[in-house]
Amino acid sequence: MTDEATLAPGEPVDLDNCAREPIHIPGSIQPRGVLLIVHDDTVVQATTSVTELLGRQVAELIGAPLHEAVGPGAAAAIAGHVAAPGDVRERNPILVQLPDGTPCHALAHHPPGTDEIIAVELEPAPGDRPLTYGDTYQRIRPSLGALNRAGSLTELYDVAAREVRALTGFDRVMVYRFDADHNGQVVAEAKRADLNSFYGLHYPATDIPAQARALYEKNWIRLISDVGYTPSLLVPTDNPVTGAPLDLTYATLRSVSPIHIEYLQNMGVTASMSISLLEDGKLWGLIACHHYSGPHAPSHGARAAAEFLGSVLSLRLVAQVEEDRITSARRVAGDLAG
Image (cartoon, rainbow, N blue to C red; front, top):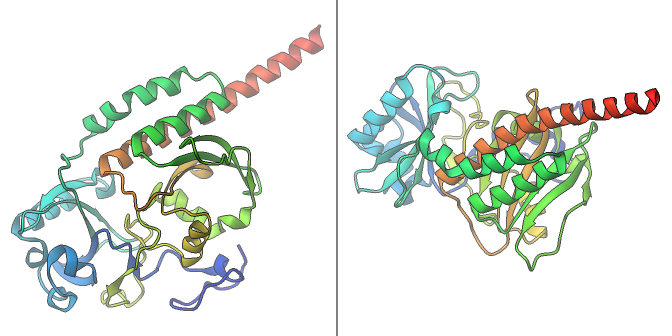
């Protein structure tokens, strides 16, 4: 990433300046849900998608209590969720019901640098059960067993790609590993039988600029359920409490770079998801999921299970690399002794 200043919000982005794009403050979200920004129980910002999900105009909600937007029951559940001890992000999501009966997953977080502001995201959850740690564990228990049985890095990569595809239903799932200079290579792949293979392909570090890598280290999973989406704008653009554009680093629905959208469209991708693989808090690689046959939105349960699998894989990769290093060192020592 260049040392030049970050682009101003709204400044046109192209291939020459995309490394300076402020992707953490896009001012919009993907329209599969809504984002409400709450201060002192009052909605101070909302996305235009509230019209579809909540049946209200943005202007009606700005300045209104949260319960007028989501109903008293959902507002009380969200307030209790936020007030509980610990990091609220680690307890997401909860299942709430809107006044019209629509079940929604509610996710809450404090935007970076702000303790007094709550960001509340709502995504419809038709027919979905409340997500629990037990549900997540049961869903990936067979996958964990397969990872534990893997005896090499190659086996770990292959198991991860296969199991994430089984959990999420994407047409193609790849394990993508970075070298010391952030160049990437596809080291495993599970895909639909009719698709060409990407296994072994290399990609330059410029494909994922530094600011994008930083977001992958903070927010471990990212879904674009419809690459052709029209962004839902955040109104007003600047947060009234801080007077600055809202940092959406931790927002599940955060809108993504138009350059990245163009990149995916050029490959024929209609939906995508990525799961970060970390080593000592730094980005080691990605599990990259692509879909080619239209929009695709795995449930929160499937996404949580896949993210959990990614975190376990991260630990196993670190352990396996160290195990391989020790084995190699012993082999060399044995050869020298012989």
